[in-house]
Length: 317
Length: 317
Image (cartoon, rainbow over all chains, first blue to last red; front, side, top):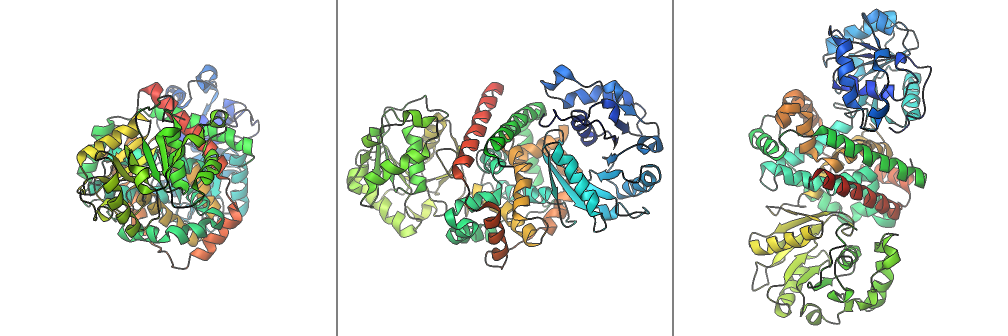
């Protein structure tokens, strides 16, 4: 795993919640901490210790499995107070319900060290709706991963207007030092940025399949053999800036801005519940059955490793 | 180059137009034909022979350059009649103007063999607007590449309602036999499919940068570290189908359809010419200057090679 050679002997991380995201973060942290004893896990489920022991190995690659961390050294806390009392980072991946997070942070604040970083993995509840019961509203920061975070490099850091700059900066340093890409989102936008972008493409995809232009599987093949690999190497602006030649993005829009606008003007705007669902759900099921996520993750790891190698060759970041 | 071990001794390809797309197709074909003499190039520029000799090597990777085809064996035709008289495939990558293509195909039809495939690389002029002056309107097929076609696997096959099924099928066979991914687009949709999808995401990207949520460079980093690599491995439907667990795409929408709809309802709809251009063009220029396309292409080749290797391991396609 990129960055795993750099081991951290100081940080004490407390994870709250052991869903897929919580466990994926656990796997990531374990490969970057010096000792599993620096990790504390808290969950209200009664079998949390056994559950973590059983589930965590599935988050490691076949190569990693040769030298797994000693999961039994992970601290399993019996109360929230115990969980956060000694933490330098508290990262919650609990239920996506605002009241849960509101109450959680108010409790955490009472028991955690004053300088502990407080991160939420939420994909939709802004920090400004999580910090309302706190004395110090400047502490909570959304650190939204792209699933699964033990593999994907992106973290969206989404502060509330009250979040302290120092909190954002320390969080950026933490992730950068571990080879990850933390991006500071400047405004609390619905869905943040990555999902908004992906869902914008998804909407047009739904429209085109619903209209019978291509099938679900054909649409996926199109993306996999064109913009997927392209955007893995260079994002959309960089790609179109390159496509415009020496005149850059301006040249691109000068050359084919008319076609872009024609597509925008003609784009579909289906909504959830509009009736396209039955056909598309059926097609997806017939095409894919149950997806082998292990295979996807294995290929993704290799691809991201290629990117790291190539970017270090060229000195790019 | 994937598939280059399978050499084709029968096909005689005529390329019309020597812009970037035409030359990129030339490079692709040269690595799959048995002899460069099976390739004929026609362009109205007077220095076409010298120009092709000089420009073509830049379309080959460093590894390929060790054993370049003998470019001097490529046939340079002096007239359209001569160019197509003996062709099994005529592929035009000429100016994006309907009158040019209309007249071209009417002329080609007079001189080319009756069973020659007639392909247009157009990104926007449908086959039904290209075939109007032909005796046999069933022959023209749009074969739209994702730039650059000597690297990217996708070909969008966009027939007119009159295009013969046999033409589509023979074209699919040609590209599949060469390791490419030809997708039959069922309706002549503005911008076809790949560009519509990419431009839908671009539109939201323009909106978010224009609103100051992230910068041009940050937006690209987000895509490069999340949906780019994800969609290179599994397209959006397959990804979300996997994300829904055993319940598939239906489960995904059941779980987070609300968030998807919130993002759709909140999405921006900037248009070309709305005034966002100055800020974005400036940011792109400052962030990227002139993009090193050679590096992008080198990394993309490696990534696509990884995909080919991994998919052949798993028996997937």
